[in-house]
Image: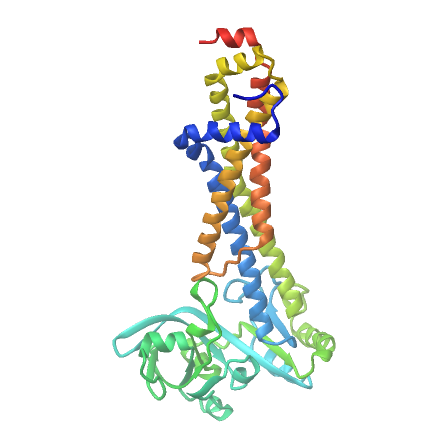
Length: 403
């Protein structure tokens, strides 16, 4: 039996006993909080994972790259194309006039079917030049062939360099070198397998890609448009000067200000992180709605509990229990329910993020755990106040008469 002036420890023990009396109700009451917290952690983890993945990918390329893209960064689609302008080989030739740089044009076709004997797989086909491999850290690993030469590119040789994932899908454990992959009715001899660079977003990565000479790609596609151009500076200290030169060169052909973008890695990374942060906040806000729903569930159950224990409350007040003690006990019950749900939600959310991380970038951070748990605790306090106040304000006489 509670003392007339119980301590917080006494009130907590009493609240725990009350909660344990009905385990099913306790679980169902906390379910909304569990779903809300786990959803918030999952979505924030995916956002953090994407940011880390994008940063790692940019860092692996070095810090001296400049990207020339059609339109603005917001207008560029998933394949790097824009409806405003289309780059040409002439643009590439003009940019090659800049000193101390390597100019790397690129065309990427995603979800393209390639075939070896009876095995057919979807991959990304990239039309690139002979200097792409060494400048973009995509050279074959030792013993796994080579990159195609400028001579092969000029002769429109039907050769290909592939990623290790595509190699496994098409050839299994056997060698891929000198075997032929069919793309769009044309057979390409595999001359190299690049080193693994890790998974990509949504399963798309350089590990599951096929690189062919741009000269051959143009013929097969019957199109000489270039999607994007990378300019790699020999010295990163010259980056700003080279950016200005690239803008001036492109500006002579494309007069409109929004026709093209010239940006370095830090600018692109900043833009991507801004988009990902906004998206993560928006999705987390939607997920947090379930926390509000869970809070309402706690409030409803606590109000039911107050009604069920009206006579007990009346008896305690009749023998001198303070309203403050009754208010604290019911408030502590609500907080425990909320924290219990928050704790389970953190465990489930973290386990879910670990599972997702195997196929999609996801990274649980301490900040996301503290945020989710803190919000769930606040929800318990906010939605526990009304039932607790109702219990503390009950008249002893009316409460004892309650049936």
